[in-house]
Image 1 (cartoon, rainbow over the protein chains, first blue to last red):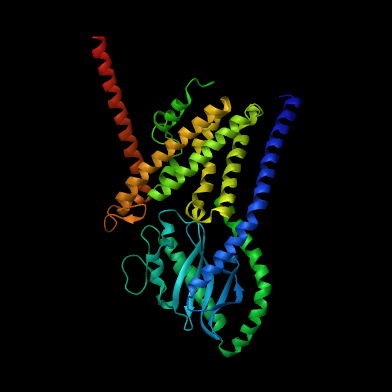
Image 2: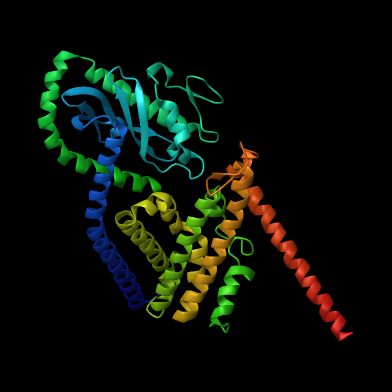
Length: 224
Length: 212
């Protein structure tokens, strides 16, 4: 191979890759703000459905399960706190499962909702289904345990997807509830902190944005 | 294979049947097992592949005179990964409901042997229109294979179709597990080959009678 050939090949490759890169950069620049806004809207809507009785959802603070950024919120009806919502991550079979958990004032689980995951289609992705998520209503720390087979008071694993079921139950949900209990069961003293929370909340909104894009990138990385 | 002499319709049919990616060429078997455990998954994967295969063939054919043969592989990779990322990003922004359904599979397409193979075997040596026809045919062939496999797997494994229950309970759960994928693909491949052999034998018999 002569130097001339090598130069030709290099130029050929560079031209195509630069063109491809520019095209992708252009599309990314156009689509990512739209995607970001829509993802945020979806998250807000998801928070609302977690506590339909509440008329206000207030951002209380943030925590970092699996080094990912997640928030927790107080659900208020009028001025009274009727429960809390926490965002959590569970380490699943092939992804981190991003989910929301709502609890009442006694930290009994009301509802869970899986926001984002990349579990095996057809097996792990059953965690999105109602029949699995409905099991969580009324569970406490002690009963958030996965059982293979029928169970009256615990969580029944999805057949063929025990790891994903465990990740949701014993990692995502349980750790979320645990964290809420640790942070919030301080009682009255913490109320004042709650006051801070409102102010912090506004600042946190920005941070939240960064956190989410980071999370996205991480997940893309894990795919390849 | 140099320039093709087949008509466009023959090219499409070729991809659908006689050179079907899954059942005849036995390439891209990974997705045929990984994402065929429900009809819905199979369907969306098939549709995504039809699109990517056609667009990749079109693009490779378009730039075929510019590609230096020595570095064609990295260039094909760029084209395929580019299209996949393009679709991934646009769908995430503009078609979120659909993206939630198939977002999981889109990125898998980058590594499909069948798409790579058609760029290498066909598109880089042929004009644009036949390349599109070939891409369409191969894509549709893949789509049909996915539909057939996932139809049987979901029906037998979950007693359901497209998520709607037909039989109570899980009749043959193994069919939706990875092992069941091998069974389904193997048995169907065997069936289609048997069908082919039978038809060929009949044709021969008919020809023998005519000459006699």
